[in-house]
Length: 189
Image: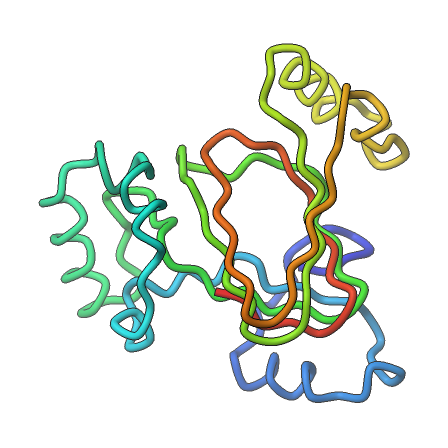
């Protein structure tokens, strides 16, 4: 994701291209990029990762989605990585961000409760409780043509900042509105 345009790069980069960019001296980077959608549950990395039991206990995919759909999809994806998943693939993400990256306010998709474990670097999260009033403010903001010039935190009752550094793990329950800032190059699962 390109921070300035908030759009995906086209054509998509390989992991090798990303690694080269990530290793570039920050002063020589031409843009600020953010990998926020690398879901790895069907890769060789998946067996090395497991979310916290709290997330597995409350996540909608883990608790409500038919297990046979998940198992069948994982088998199909191992054979054909481009196969269409038959469930929301939202359990295992690898997030790679460079200093200055920002992901605007959002609610994580698929009814997922998510976890973040910072391996390297740090992240700052800005949380807004999912009250009726705050959800209405979020709906207005997310459909507004002036979204890019209006800071949602100014439109709600409270916004709380949580700072994570290497070694910290945090869980976000389904429905929490949040934004994320990366003050230094980071690797997060």
